[in-house]
Each structure stands twice: as structure tokens, then as C-alpha cells.
Length: 188
Figure: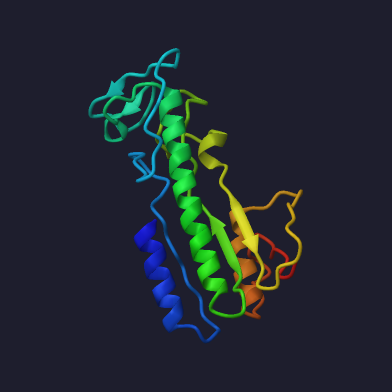
């Protein structure tokens, strides 16, 4: 996340005169869960011990071999390491947004993810794409309009289908009527 944020901010400084669009793709949080600032102490006592699945990337019933980390064997330890990945990414997202805001008029910012991560809800662990369980399909959708008002939580359902109509509206364009999804509010 560190180098991705550095690259995005460097690009934004060169393209500082709007209008512009920037797509920033982070790999964090992603397995294996090894953020640079990970907590070092994980109490493995009393946790749900899982087997390491050699040559099996599905995560069905255990830890996929590509996710296995030395000394970690419980679901709880992996969940804490995943939370460390989230905290690491959050610190760089904050740095990105503050850096963009420092360039002048605050830009619109939209954050989402392409998938969640399995934590055993349906027998899969630390993988994705093998099921449609909520832990794998529920993802964040955070939207900060270019003219932000007071922070708010949208209580109606939103969808990744709302992204394209929202971005078109920000650009002053209308989405075709046949498109699913609806634009999110463009001002706070």
C-alpha cells in the first residue's frame, strides 16, 4: 500500500489541473496476511485450530497453503492478522485522501473492493470465489463527493452497480436508462 499511495500521489501532482480520473488499485488486504506493522503476539491457545491444506487453494475446511504463515494455526490468529492488513491499508488510504485534498479542491473519492474474504461462515477459510456467502460478497462502498457535507451513512441498499452511474454523473454525463444502478448523491 505504501508504494501504491506514493505512486498515486506523484501522478496526481503532475495531473493537478482538473478534470482528471485516477484509478488506484491496492493489493492490501490480501493473502498471505503479512502487513509490515502486524501485531507480533497472537495467542493461539483456545482458538479454532485449522489444518493447512497442501496443494488446495479452496480453503474448504482449512488454511490454503498459499495463506499459511509460520506459527499461525488458528482462525482467530488469521482474523487478527487480516485486521492488521485493514489497519495498514486504512493508514495509506488516509494518506492518499489527505494528499489529494492538499493539492487544491477536494476530489470525489470512491472506495470499494472486488470481493470479501472467507472466515469460515460456510466452511471456507481465508479464500474467496468459491461461494456466495456474505463474508465473500459483502464489500465496502465508501463515497465522498467532491463537495462533501456532514458524514452520513446511506440506510438504503447500495450496490457496485451504482458506481458507473455515479462516476458519469460526476463527469456531467448521464448513464443510459438501460443501465442498472443509480447515481449516489454528488454533494453532501
